View 1 (spheres, protein in one colour):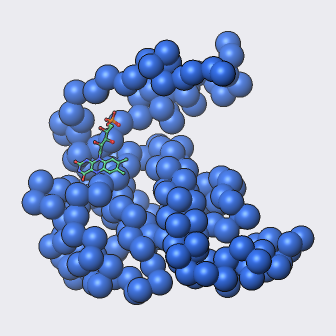
View 2 (cartoon, protein in one colour):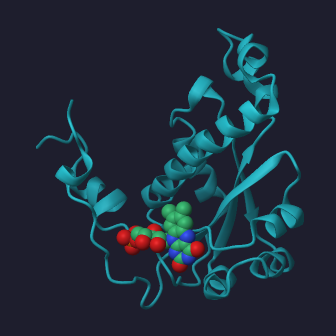
View 3 (cartoon, helix red, strand yellow):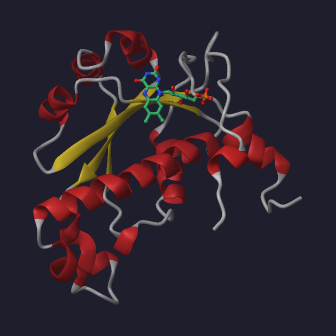
Length: 196
Ligand SMILES: Cc1cc2nc3c(=O)[nH]c(=O)nc-3n(C[C@H](O)[C@H](O)[C@H](O)COP(=O)(O)O)c2cc1C
């Protein structure tokens, strides 16, 4: 009773949502991805910097180029998922800041004139957005399979540029046969939460 979200939505987003390892053939449309993005874009980031960038890997040729950078155990998942997205952090996000933070356009120069500061901020905030994205995929009734078992340098060279730091690859689709590993335990509230 402590949560405002109804129980079915809690199940969809968290309790029954699992990390899928196999997928059906049912396509994931651009309209679905657009709906997911238009929901999760409201998740908060520092200075509203929204540094997450999403590369949808749609063509068979691009899929082949991606699979070769995945760890061996991840390759079949990335080869067969209906849609695969590369999530990256834009280290030059400050260029958009005057538009994204109109009440404080000076933030671009005051806080983010130095590249190492931008990189740190971009990775933290894009990782937050990656989490929003995964929950958004679930909100669309789809399963996500995030993966970091991959050759990051190879992936960056193949699909991105020096201004974009790859974060993870996400397989997206309806779960297929034997899609789940057994659910692993989670830490209990008392193991995680302290009050001072
Ligand atoms: C950032 C991230 C990276 C992950 N990398 C891999 C991976 O490389 N290969 C893999 O099979 N699973 C990977 N996983 C899946 C996790 O093991 C899985 O989400 C976790 O065990 C929870 O599983 P559940 O959602 O079924 O409870 C990754 C998950 C996250 C969030």
